[in-house]
Length: 91
Image (cartoon, rainbow, N blue to C red; front, top):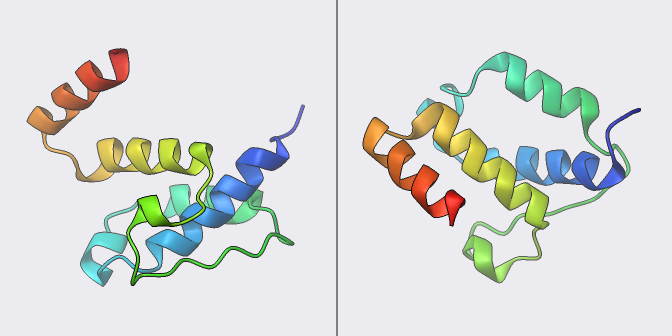
């Protein structure tokens, strides 16, 4: 069974969003993760991120938000932030 269309679109959205990260932060994301998202994104899905608006103001899939949280936790979060995320996600 392949990846669902919803997740393919979420990968497309995530790739568009992370383009707006500062270069030093973007480069912290493991290349294998970016390659995975690129290979599995919905090639025909056209999502445009507006860096002038915050994420809540944009029509982003719930799955994309989950991917952002996971990416933050895996790549950027301190141990304290990871613990707080675990508590929030458990609720």
